[in-house]
Length: 288
Ligand code: AMP
Image (cartoon, rainbow, N blue to C red; front, side, top):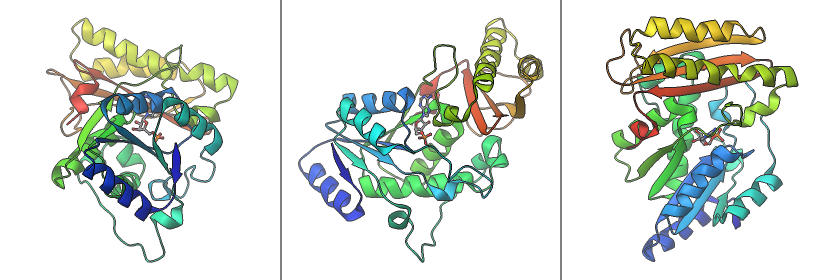
């Protein structure tokens, strides 16, 4: 696997690969890789002749009080993992390369960023959309792979691809979990042993929501109450939000007609954890 830091070098490379008729798959990440990331990588390798991964902890998507500087980083470990999977190229730019002095363009997807995490993390999705569009312009992939773990992010990127007429196939893959159900996340590393034990409450609460839905419950309030009951019974958790929204616009639903996204965010010690489930649907509902 070749590690490339220079933007022009990648652009020349992908231009040649395209001329040779190669299909290019791309998995953007912030590194500190786990099985969730690797599931995206494996799908890209399966579907394309060449796979690019990027590792970039993007400063513009972190708020001033968030964990940009402490976000876990381990390039050597990540490189070994990616090499082992058979990734062809790793794009590993510096902040200066991505945002040289004088940088002044930002892209915003309106409305979809006004709920859930967008409401709590001001400017977060503006940073995400901007960096993802830049990465797409650099790597020029045919297909790109994201995780349902960040469902709102997936819907926002899909909207950006559609609105800006990008010729990129957008895939969203299922949430990969630890044995006890905790969704894998680079931020799980922040958890103490006690917090780690309580972190499984998110998954349990979402399982409960699925169970209720399967038994015919369609009232969001009822489902929310049961989720909150489970979360409140864990004293280390601080609830950020529990929302049940539609999959098109992420607007709160009182009654679930066919499908709904149940999204949960909590603080647990130093970590802010998110998780979700799609009632009546699955990850395919987030793909383009
Ligand atoms: P990140 O490095 O956190 O920015 O994540 C990079 C990509 O991996 C995003 O598309 C995430 O949605 C995806 N991802 C993160 N955690 C998981 C997980 N547990 N299962 C599946 N995909 C994930």
